[in-house]
Image (cartoon, rainbow, N blue to C red):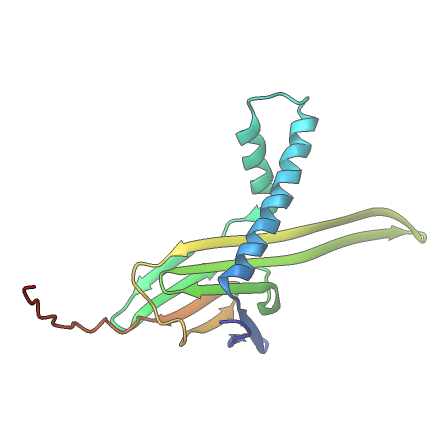
Length: 175
């Protein structure tokens, strides 16, 4: 699916919505793991380098850096309707990978806050907000005919089911 784009409709405009190969999504996952790992190590050092709290540090770092993506999946006769909550993200900040049995949504946005007083920077803050959600789909889907709409912070997919496999009768012959 390299280079494929869906027309993602949003309230303001229609924007290109990138459907990405799993390898590229996997690279983004590895990048997120490194960021979380660095933050977990910072928490480990700030906590006095106490061993035995590695999972606590990891989960705290994860909760600080990754925002949850709530998902609902509805199955119809034709396919799946998937709704994912992605408040504050634009179509350009989201990437999606769809495989026959899996949907992966990732997103990254940079947020900057800056307050000035008499020309000197008194306060400056930058944070990267990220989302990642991997969902195993309950049925095999057709990855070629997906539509997606982003409206009011909800990303809605209509994914048709894959055509059922044809049954082939095989005659068994004795050797």
